[in-house]
Length: 248
Image (tube, rainbow, N blue to C red):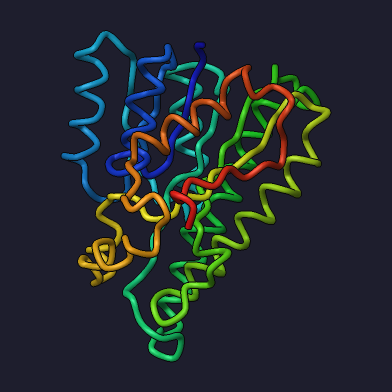
């Protein structure tokens, strides 16, 4: 397995685990981050220490100009992109729907949905055989919240991930004949910092009894699923969402 992978929001969590695994599998990797340069630098340094090739690019994926600049950096420094992982996402603070102000709602939708669309547009322009590309894979990171609804915690986030599921289905059908495979993963309870940032750091331990496997998933397990969807082993799969929830 080899190629060039751009993984948004890859300074930590599922994104960081995916960047590291992609590098181990032979990909040159672009580590995208928004604010925490130190964490992104640690991911890149780890990849390089293991003999891999990686760059890091600061960009707000909800900003089209910054997304275009990021893809141009990848073109220049790594070469033609062959895989995009739309992982960047935020939940916003946990709360009932009426507690969210307009700015918070728009930010959740912009980062989770608009950002994925902007990145997918740039990837298609480069990968599609219609545009002279050689094909590739796009993997979107959705969430089980899209199915469960996020009641009393993060309905805007759940709605945004529902949109990601629709994006996965629609884009997969649109570009399948152009050499691009689009799929998604839908993680359930995963050990990352996103829960603490939403103000519900104790949520994971409380919900474990509701998980048939009686444990929390890991970012590394999500990364394995993402890399499989990127690989030729999933060559006949498009528009598919893999659920990683321990049976919840």
